[in-house]
Amino acid sequence: MNISDGASPVEKLKAAQEKQQVEKALQRLLDMCAGATGALVATADGFVVARVFKQDIAEKSLAAITSSVMSLAEALVNETGQGPCQNLIVEGQEGHVVSLRINHTRVLTAMATRNTRLGMLLSAAKVCAEQLASTLGEK
Amino acid sequence: MSNMTEVKIIFTGTMGAGKTTAINAISEIKTISTEAVATDETAQRKETTTVGMDYGEVTVDEGLVLRLYGTPGQRRFRHMWEILAKGALGFVILVDNARPAPLEDLSIYLDNFKNHIAASAAVIGVTRTDVSAQPDIDAYYQYLAEREEMHPVMTVDVRRREDVLMLLDSLLLSREFE
Image (cartoon, rainbow over all chains, first blue to last red; front, side, top):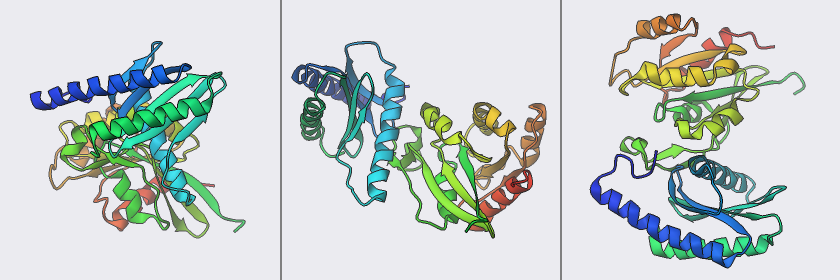
């Protein structure tokens, strides 16, 4: 299932246009951070908008999980009075994953190898999210 | 507080059937929710949908606290289904009777949580029967009989506290909690 399934022609055109814009931004993210292995933008309710990955990835699952963990991270900072949530950082044994909200309806997830400095990945992801927020607007 | 027992209950079922609403209707604490703007078919009926989980608590008996976890409804969130189902001692499955094939909808959750339900208990709450009266309760029982499963089935208005508590009562009755 994709975000454009069952959509009108106009909506499909808009989705295609957004996919193109987002892919460009994600590619810039990967160019900016050498160790980055991939990035994806999902709708806040778990559909793939666009993705750029150096290896194969189960993009649909990743989009759904991205929306779940982002929502849970936001619930966590709100419950602990540390909100609003700025980003989510997960350090795995093999690499880092960061997630950030672009706007009300879009979430970005980016990942990098373990040798990548976390700060590099995070700042590249932040720049990407800010660019996309201004391109896509506050929807 | 030493004789307090806490039991984990899962609210699952069709998107838009009212899982979040049901937990909000009975929780004694401020509920935790993880709503996102809906872009799928849910959007036709409501603006937001649960993408992580809901959480609330209700005391049903002196010493028995139910910890209420709501799952997302859509199948793409089944990673959350597995995470949330761990350690649950009862499942409330809510089915939206106004959707095209409510019994098929029900089967998604009965199948997915099969092993968990076999080791615990389940109750089925049929919602929006004011919009669509069919299938009726008999049809649900017949469907369960064909599957060789026995769970209580009742119609509910999930906005009503007493309706949701009735669901939990019958769930508790079908299982002895220590």
